[in-house]
Picture 1 (cartoon, rainbow, N blue to C red):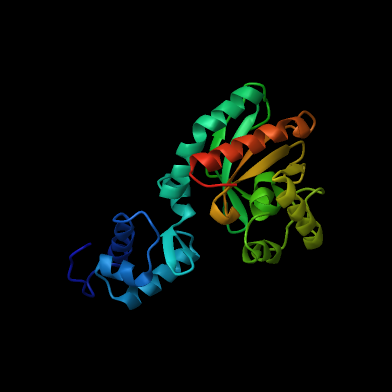
Picture 2: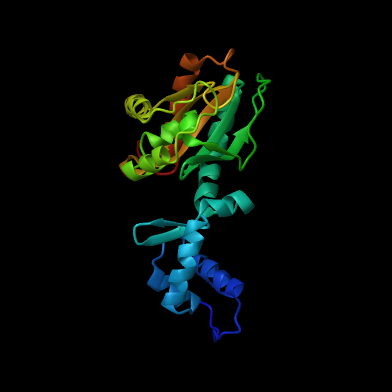
Length: 252
């Protein structure tokens, strides 16, 4: 815990730094009161700063607990939960890449978008690969739909409220259509898209699920819409996602 005499001369940056430093003392989520104690700041000050950090995705709020947010990973790839996912998944992702020769991706859900946290380029694919940190609309991507299928009603409602904007003529823009597809994905644990985000692009994905079937991430294979054999690749993607879940100590 920081021991400082916080006066009016202390900058906002100092206060924010104290809040982030407080997370370093414990790996689990933390409440506002405990955060204020560790940062040696007034609770009212911490509450105000936390609200701003949550709105900007530097912190995530889950019930009464706060966690470091995915935006920090986008900036520095140092957030503990995405890093843990990467560490657990990378060797299995590489096995999938070697077995299929295709581009393999690991993504997490951030509000209405997916964020790519690992991308392995396949030896048999000329299709452009995504860059780490890239953001794509969840409703128009296979990994996004894989995670939305197991996300809370509130998360899905936020995606629908965002407008289901079309990326191509094939993007699902009708809420009822999207909900039907998510229901089917919950049964099969397989999500697909063909030219829904970009022309001549297709992908197949399966969610990495935590306890209570909470979606932690998604594993996907992407390639040319003309060449990608989704039916053949889907079992390998599902198996890899299940193995990552087990490696993380969760169950599917």
